Every structure is written in C-alpha cells, then in structure tokens.
Amino acid sequence: MNRIFSGVQPTGNLHLGNYLGAIRNWVRLQDDYACIFCVVDLHAITQWQEPAELRASTREVTAGMVAAGIRPERCILFNQSQVSAHAELAWIFNCVARMGWLNRMTQFKEKAGKHRENASAGLYVYPNLMAADILLYKATHVPVGEDQKQHLELCRDIAQKFNSDYKVDFFPLIEPIILGEASRVMSLRDGTKKMSKSDPSDYSRINMTDDADAIVQKIRKAKTDPDPLPGDPVELVNRPEAANLVGIYAALADLATAEVCLRYDGAMFSKFKEELAELAVAKLGPIGAEMKRLKADAAYVDGILKAGAARAREIAIPILSEVQEIVGFLRV
Image (tube, rainbow, N blue to C red):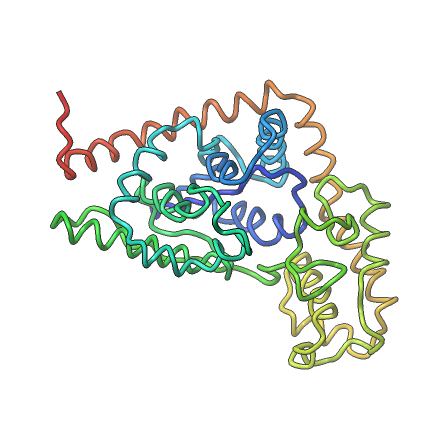
C-alpha cells in the first residue's frame, strides 16, 4: 500500500480552511493509504511560541483531527518533536539542499516580510525539515494545497540529489495529491486573502469550535457583492467573495462548483447564505462538539500522541539508520 505523510502546525484556532483544505481529505484517505499524520511542533517554533500555548495548541489540533474523523487505530497520529529522527534527518538534508534552492522559496519571503535579517534560521531552512518529515517514512504521496507545491518540488530535488550523490536508489520521488473543491478557503471578509487564524477579525473565519449561532452570524455577515449568483462558474472569476462562498458550499455538500451554480442560478445572496449556514451547521456542529469534549480530556489526547509516536519511531529509526550508513557515519 502507498504511504501518505502530512502535517499541520499546532497554531490553535482550527478553522474551516484547515478542515476543508486538509483534515477532511485526510479522513477520506486513511482507508486507501497507510497514513501518517503529524502535528508539526518543530515547524511551529520557527516563529516564537508561548510554551504553554504551544502545548495547549498541540492538544487542540489533535482533538480537532480526531473529532473530524481521523482514527488513531487506523493511521499514525503523533506530534513531531517526540520523534527526534525528524531533526536528525533534517540536518543531513541541510547539507544536501543548496542555498539557491532555498532562496527561491516564496513562503519564506512572505513570512519574513521586510525583516528578513531578523527571521530565524529555522524559518529559512524549514523546507528541509519538511522534506525530512516526508522522506523519513519513505512516503510515496503527500496531499498538498497550491501554496505547498513548491516545497514538494524541493523535497523531490533533495531526494534526487541524495540518491545521485551517494549512488543509491533510496528515497522515492514523492507524488502530490490535490483533492476536492475549496482546497484553498478564503477569508469571509476579503475573498483575495486566505482564511487565517492570524486575521484580527474573528468574522473572517469559521472556527471548528464555533457553535451554531456563531456560524450563522458569520456567514450572514460574510462579504459578498450585489449581483445574483451566476449559472456558470466562469462568471465568478472576478467575484472573489462570491466564488469563495460558492466554493465553500460545494466542498461541504460534496458537489462541483458548476452544480452549485446551476442550483442557485439567479438567486440572491440572502437566500444562498441562509442555506449555506444551514449546511455548515449540519456539517461542522457535531465536529465542534466532539472537539470540545476531547479537549477537556487531556490525558486521552496525550495517550493518542504517545502511542502514535511509538509507532512512528518503529518506522523512522530503521530508515534513519540506513541513511546514516549511506552517508558514512561511524556507528560503533
């Protein structure tokens, strides 16, 4: 069976974008692939994290994944820092990857902004850690959004260069999996910006822990335009807020965008928002309730992560040992 690796940062406040863009797809993949899902807390500290909040966020993200349908008995679910082999392989990849490759990474430029000299070295080299996360388990496929495709290409470059440098056929060349409608969910206040927990307005996103009233209110207040919905999705190209809401409906209803447009051709947004809110409450309400229940049982969540880390180490340590042998490290 092919193996999938994917990770999510423990940044707290899981929202609709996290669910539709990643977690829901992971739930669907776990029956067809050997899945390894990781809460990537090593990646999180490339930017400052309050230690107590980082621990709480790690538990919250884990609770959200399980509430959404990730089954720890079916896949491997753990937090990255519990498997030290991630960091060890990342250092080897720091010595394989080229500076020119990292200089082309657009996400570093976006996150560092105008203050690149003040960014952590970890933020600069974290694509190498991402490659280590994947290749440590010899994963064959990675579900990715459009914003991660460049990092996956770097992962393939690192694998290819390692194999070439050491004249081995060791690491696989990873293939991307891009799934479903609304893989990139945008802000409810600005359809040109990705939905994010860092947005100062809570009305820009639907949190996975929002209750029914909050979901309805946020969708009702979501930014739209004055025109009715078109019957052809092509007409949404220059209507980012309208396109975002139609995409969210399509994803939640498991429909193509074209089907949603046909269903609501000529409808005003007042009617469409009512039905979108009803759908969102039906889909997200049970997940939010279960997530809150799991968050209240820290020992249970910690047990899931501990057991998952033990299973991850069983796969990772032998692969890292082979890498160390290939590189030429003396092991006595």
